[in-house]
Image (cartoon, rainbow, N blue to C red):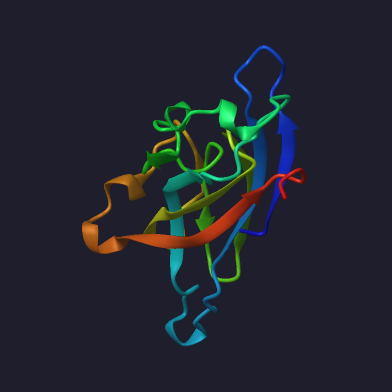
Length: 166
């Protein structure tokens, strides 16, 4: 993750939530292999899996006088969300990364708390160097690749922190 930003609260009348944006950069650090007269390993991003967790002790109490007005049950079901989207790329794209290529995107999530953590992985496939990037809805051969061509690229945990958290 390159960075995160607390964007602000959702509009009044909805449940109080904090909106966060994050920027991710994926880069293929492999080099061209001139001896093999090829580009070197090329990969396609197929999807992602995110674990989004709210911090228990950083509830956004809004205009409430104190934290005691909130019950533990208010957040029991919303503490952790798993997003598993193995075939929908990221923000509608299924980019192909040749050696030296990178792909960067921004997305976001909403939390009831002022802080949280995200971690996860990208579903990837080793592909031929002639494979083209795609968008959701395009035919993507790598979605049907043999299991030995598929792998998960882990994303280390990163923090989501509101500017108003202490």
